[in-house]
Length: 355
Image 1 (cartoon, rainbow, N blue to C red):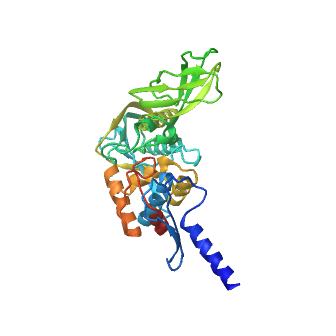
Image 2: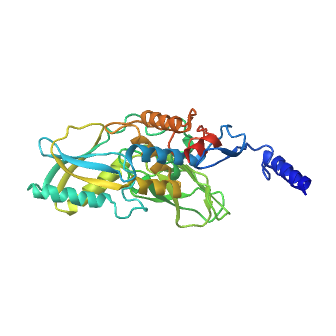
Image 3: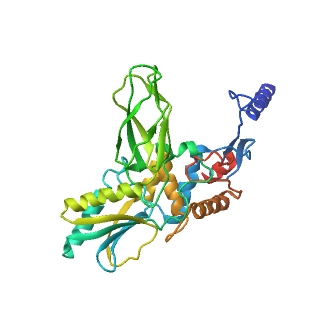
């Protein structure tokens, strides 16, 4: 009996040395830790660096909890200019305005609060609506992110102003014959331009459409089902500040306030504080980030890690890496907060240490 027990244990240990059911060509890494003691119960090549993909979000949201606390909110403020003729809205990377996950938090409600304060001051005309983007310095995209991801909805970049999750719906139509050039019917919300269309029709019922570029020059390629009068594809909005401004301007005008031009700027001198709009809690944003694997939410939190007054991708990533190295005692190789970059690398040991 003792021999059988010994042989069983020996066989079990030999099996555990090499994970089963995985191709020999695949990279593998595993570790099991005791939660209370931290002792290693099992491990296999646990320090091998692998691409974590959306597991990156665990590090980002944990860092946000550590720095801000779970109940903190992101505040977007509105000011009057010193001459009282302009409204300045200060973008602070709140990713949740008009999000399907937080229907109660909208740019329209923020505009209504602004209108109330403007009326209270006896004003009915505003010369300029200024969207101040000075909070984020430099590029909005990680240098290690794939260019082909950027025009698609899952690759929407976190920016000082975000609305509709920085996603628009591009509607295509297709001829009934295969191999024919399709057309763009409409873009919602209106982005001021439509993508150049290189999409062709084919016999399959699913699409392979990818959208590339920015609002200045963007295009769509791939294929879609033939004979469709309407076929919707999601695309990232590259200039959400303009969309946000149009929503606010339209709402203010509905409230009886005439608004002149819109100015998207990196800085503008503020005067009197008017009001603000607060996001859902960091905990609520983090829940959606991980449950839905939301890249935009994750990268917005990463930017917030970079500073209170100004931030950048470099500052946010520096703060995230510092947090990871402090928690796991290992060097961090991360280039965004969402995991969309294929250059991110971590180990099973680092993830287990974080958890």
